[in-house]
Image 1 (cartoon, helix red, strand yellow):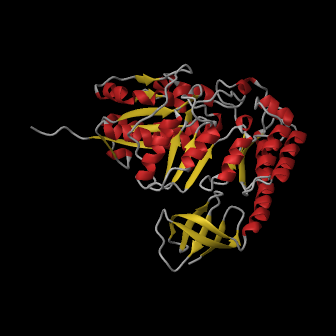
Image 2 (cartoon, one colour):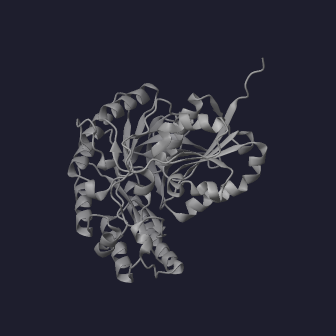
Image 3 (spheres, rainbow, N blue to C red):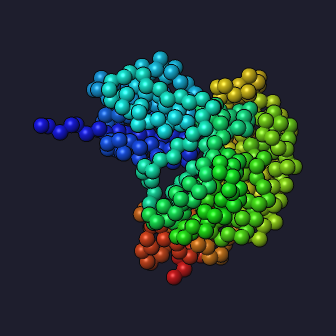
Length: 440
């Protein structure tokens, strides 16, 4: 008897860290179902795209990619669209790309084994599109982690905030948290496998509510940080509305908790924050910043900013610029507003031209570059612990990252192991990174 042909798949991921980790779990699920991952679409029988719909360009990229590979359908290859665009567009994807066999939103990943069976049986339109009513999280023992030293743990899925510009509540469903015991069990498992850094993930990670009622988010942070073998614990992304002083206290008292907080503000104008339905004002946001500034450990603060939200005046934009000065962010992620389907803001008049949005974005990024250059001077001469992430052979530099999430590249005569922790003296500063020499 001849052996059955091996099932192969190719998976491309677009978007955020949540998508990256979702893909790790999807890959593990596929492997558990007898599939083998390959590195090119040409070698794959099943081609999957894990998609992002936060911004229009990310969404367009997926459909362009599908169009590019349409010719492969004639070779018997099958296609699946996963993630946020899948949930947002639903069965319309079959109309736009009829050679797609499977459409699966992120809230339905737990159903993948059954969906794969249907695809293998030749069913043309297999869908998994759970709505906001699902209480299920995607928990699986099959996770194909791509980094052997740093790993993700999703502790909460979905979002209940409904910011006016954001599609996530519609694509990822309502907030649903895992039990803290299951999170801690996964952390221990990762430590036993040799992982030394864990990053806890959630659309609003600090909105976590232990479904067993045992631990608050801050208590979970402290508990994960005490896992034997774990040297660093990070978390992202926080929402200012749910950011409590107890989180700062946890960072102060647990050296294993990285002294870095990503706290998206989106705008420095209270008027625009209200229009965005962000659930806090400028003063309330700055109060949370003051808690971190007063901490016993120096906490690195980063943020997200949207420019050109409908109705944003020059005065509103100036308030965002002044907020950058007042806070002194270590880095920012800044974007031009783009309307997303199903969101409240899609119905707002958007009189701000793309040219003006681009101008404001450039002004914002230029100011932030100056701030970062100034702030990075404080690290000159400091000796900092970095996790070794790799080596840039061209520059003959090792790549490292500090607890504050700063890139610190360094030179050394030794050969440090990737994943190890070494001491590096910072001797050169750049706007986006530091450089130095390993201290032996």
